[in-house]
Length: 449
Image (tube, rainbow, N blue to C red; front, side, top):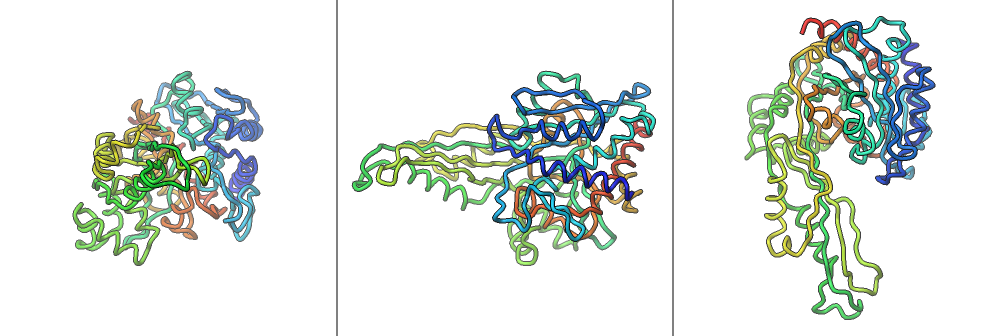
């Protein structure tokens, strides 16, 4: 494990230092830097796709020895921006200290990029015999801005390059402690993004004479306040039931977390003792609405003619665009809603994969080998990943990893797109071993299917 862990950690540090920051523009990301790093690591060029200059994705494939299903390992190479002022260590240096690697992308998801590459390389080099079916390593661009220059573009334009039946990707979370030992989440479902841009219109005029004027930013401010304060629809999914069951709570506590009428009170009680877990519980049981990007007006002494806010809305399985539309109309009120222009930015339904089959069993084998338990449960993630493109085509997609106990699931989840993102070196090594076992055992189970 020591050599493998060292190789994976070194690769992770290199990927962090490549600083493939996706700012949402076509020119952002510049993932070609990390594609070059992977090509050097593997010693082969792979199949490179570049729909826009510098925005590269790469596919490496090991042909199988037979006609069994194909397994793909998918990661993304871009990361979100980071403000160094909020970090203990520079987010793009890859600082190693006290057994941790610090840097943007260490949990989202350069850690998995490095661990997957390390587990995949022996098959690519011929050190290990091929699986019965093909094995793919896919590293994509643009996941952090919707995947339109990455996974989606490849599936739309070169589907044969990434044709697979099973997929391992993000998100792997630390285990949940229970009375019977740690329970390991397997991310089998994710919320769907229904982002909206709300635009307000006003009539320009001199800022010293506002009386009776239609000021766009006032309507915009009202809309933001109403969206932020209003309760949102609840959906108790089968995955949330699986999570609550895994927690091993007493009957009363479990019942309150599964009752749509009691869930908000249960989350408030949880927030008093564990605010990070309360935030996660809310996201996994509610439609979430987060106004995050605001623009309006031209000058301090001019009444604003226009203003806009981009709102991150995430829907659970069982919710859809109708749920979103109904909520916006109800919360904003007909008076305000009718004065705004509501434009969809991104619409993708929530997706899920079944908890059965060769990959489900192989993941269980991986946990048993590395963590000493098969206690796993179906997990729902609040974010959105490239897995949605594959699930829409019938691919079974999971996210899973093994971590040490130095960071719990609540703190781990809070690091996504936040300050002081970090991961322990031991967790990298454990995930490498977990993936190695999972890949090998998938080869066995895929033949038995």
